[in-house]
Image (cartoon, rainbow, N blue to C red):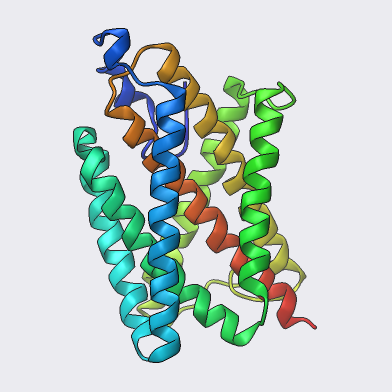
Length: 246
């Protein structure tokens, strides 16, 4: 069982499987409910952040970076100590909501309507892939998992290099450009982010089948949120590149 999502990997569930009674075990319904709670918390926080940036545009940067830092800290705590997911994952969701609200406001100020398009595409992708997974159209085979994990790792390395080189004034070619190659790169990243949802579905299903402990519902919901946040941001970036060519 392999997933490129750092929150949902083999080591996380390995020590937990088979030690809980059915009443204490992770369920699909519980995971869905907790995913809904985290999503709602993120949306409410995003709405607040968006409103604050409209009142005072200077707060956008503060909310954006504050959300990034807070979300990073919360995610690291959850990943290294999954039992904290019950109280730490809502904190992560709120922090990411603050970040998403601020960055969405910035994109919307430049490209009107882009946020609604990105949100619809993100949730549409989630629904389509969930349907494809549950009906067996897409199967998370070992080769599929290996390919997505490798591609995701490659993207992470490129982003890390882009971040580090940025401190020295060096720009990675094509990554942020709106030419055909730049758009092609964004399309590829969006596809990989979307395929990570399939791996997440498979991992959650496996966790339920093996009787992971109840707190893993929060952990699994957190992992799914990580992928959704990434997918939404990449949708924004892709749409911005396409709009800049008009």
